[in-house]
Amino acid sequence: MTRKTTWARRKPATETDPRFAPLPDAVSAPAAAQAKTSTTTDLSVQPQAKAEQSSAARAFRREMARLDRIKAQLTEMQQQGQGYKLQLNQVLQPLLDQRLACMRQMVLTLDPWLDVKTKGLSKLQRQMALDLVCHLSAELAQTGDAEMAALHDRRSPETISDKQQAEADDMRELFGAMFEDMFGTAPPPDIDGNDPDAMMRAAMEKMAAMAAEEEERRQAKAEARKAKRKPSAAQQQAEQAQQDADTMLRGIYRQLASALHPDRAGDEAERQRKNALMGEANAAYERKDLVTLLNLQLQAELVDPDHLERLSDERLKSLTLLLKRQVGDLERERQIEQERWWHDLKLPRGIPLTAAALQQNLELERLALEDHLFSLKIDIETAGEIATLKPWLNRQRQMTRAAERRMQLMDDFPF
Image 1 (tube, rainbow, N blue to C red):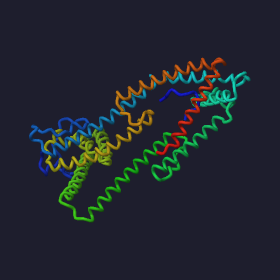
Image 2: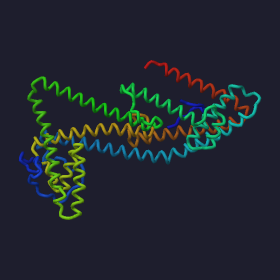
Image 3: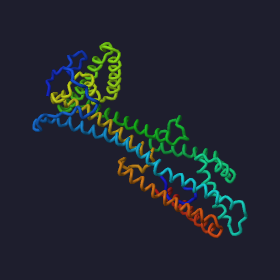
Image 4: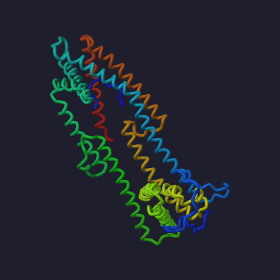
């Protein structure tokens, strides 16, 4: 979040099991004694003996475990991100406030030296002091400090508004170049070039859209190759399994739609309950969320909690295909969430969003800030006397030039 720098600018059921029949008016199973909450673990296939597990049941359990694991990771990511935000306010914000106070004090210490013809201050030293005053007062003005904004505009040839407009123009130009380089097209014209978060969201949405398009192209090529040659028995079997999976998903949804129809409600409370469940069912079917649909069956008392244990291997295979699809969607969602948190929390990209990693990063940020504050306070004392001010300004100028040379080398380095 902050680093020590110079003050200068830094750039088993049968197949006829009616509970999974595809028609909504199929005969429903006996009602469960009590509907369960919507959790994935309620749907686990648990054979009576380990030796009785079929390969289909094991595959189903594996996908359910993956689904549970990714959902838990998404939940932890949300919890850790929110917790880290709170810790930032509690631990770092007081230090950041002290940093702003030190910056303000430095401006007020350096500014009077610009109003007198101090004997011994060279032109370069005076220019360095002016650059520092303008840079620090501009940064403070961005926090809402009106006095620093006025001081900046009095000392600088460019006003705060001029600088902000120039920075926004530079940001739009840089973002446009990066966007076109990454995606081969100009960014959307309605993107607010003054909002870095909006530009980041646009880039992430474009990446997601390109990934979806690439997946569609891949599937289209695969379908074209299939059409050119006679499918093998294994391919025919896989295609049939996919069709069976879609049919099963549609059947579960139709069964729910029939059972949750408002006309079948006995009173207003039951009508509202069914409307709420049907809304969940519609959303789940739209995103092909098998687990939610299965749990809604339990809540609607259309099946008993152990119904999955009695499904045939063929039906379990169909359910497993649906789960694999859902797992893939959740994995993509997890990646997007990681990128969002890294950006929102200004974290190093790639840092695990776990309690241990975030705590370590917070501690490093705290130590860096405390070290920076210690240096700033020494610098303020140094700038208060002409005897120490002059060599200090010389060092600031040397460090600024060294930083500029490093930046130039980086710009010239052929990546």
